[in-house]
Length: 322
Image 1 (spheres, one colour):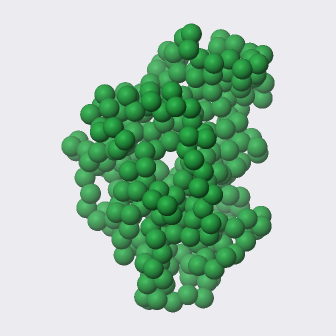
Image 2 (cartoon, helix red, strand yellow):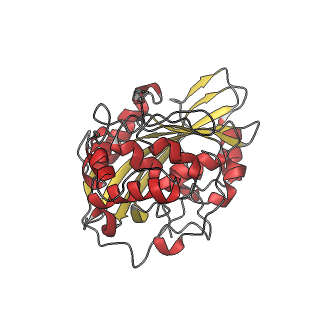
């Protein structure tokens, strides 16, 4: 099992990081964040890592607020999702403090992960290496992660939703979730699947927050556990219990509104050094499948519950927020 604490402890704090009205310094940033002992796969501690105002955002998928909602989103790229069988670190990671804004320290994490997909739903795929860029906004005063932003290259998102998860079995999963979990009056014996196929896989090439099959794929994996998301997978416009409407109109958020160009350039240089083509951000892996010996996908201090494989999934119930 890979431990990333030492890597994070060696985070680069050089003359290039930006200080904007800082009331704290890099020493306080490092000691506080390391003291939090953050592990993205330690879901039991999410109420400690995140507060009610905390958010996670992928420009193309939207923003999820609060510990429970953040956990649900993170599940989508782990074996807690029915689409993923295993995920593990598959190369080096690079960490740095990119800036300090008053009492908020922005940590950048670039890493490679290898995904093994659920072949029962997606067909037989070899493992896939994916480059990820995360920014964590650590609030020193509150000792919590205030914001988490995620960056993937557009070709990876396009491949994921237009090819990888675009199968008849996933259509069945969505339609069966509509009927069995959400109680929708749809015919899941064929007409529902046909209506799904009439939708674009994504909005404007890469967005999974609009009226698309991709958006319903994302939220169906959540609705299986949490009926809060049922409104999001409805074909018709339907407000969720908080009055929000999703999977109808994309917000078309520009990823560069969330990341500075220097961070993205550094990320691209990072994955190019791992042999991945510039602007692509993923590759079909040549390593053997991970199912026999799954390891954690956590970039920081994974605990005993961090192993990411189907065998490590824990029972979930009673989810109410998203």
